[in-house]
Length: 268
Image (cartoon, rainbow, N blue to C red; front, side):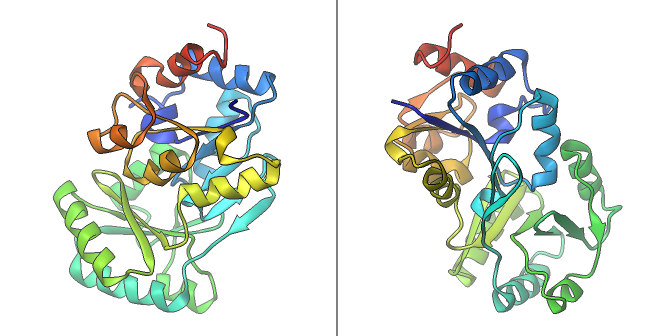
């Protein structure tokens, strides 16, 4: 029996133009009305998720930074895992030297630091998420003891694929994974969406056998493998679909709603 539902955001909850459809919102509210928690699990920071939950008119728990920061529906921190000082310092040096063409973002708690707030990639991300970047030197952040929950590299798809491969080999103590063809997410090795799910299951007194997850990309794999029931979106790569226990329609076709109705968890 499903007693809690976890969902990725981009490519899963949201359409390609970053909207929550009427049926998807209906599905979320139907679950909550039945007393089934609906949790968003995303690589996003809290401030990039709150506009979505506010738009839907719901207050729900969040797994942010792909599991590095877990918040209750009231916003209380249940778990926080930042990258270590030396790992962060070393990574920033190597990433900057090997991939100078990349835009590097430094996320710590409720803050998003960038070297240039006018960088077109940063401006585009602000428009998409509603979060606001702050201009800062990363070395200064480190020296103040502000350790990142996540580093995000933005670059062209070919560079992103190469960076994932090369940097993971250089930094085995970090979790380095693409969340989009142009986005590379870097966190502490212990951090995955599955680790965030584990924190919330303990919080609710539930088990993985009572959970269901929805995802569409490579950084969702651990989550899809961890929950008893897992659903890949129709727009997911084949490798992601192969790891899920079921596949639904795409994020453009109300995939979450369609599956929940088919599974009898909500009424049509």
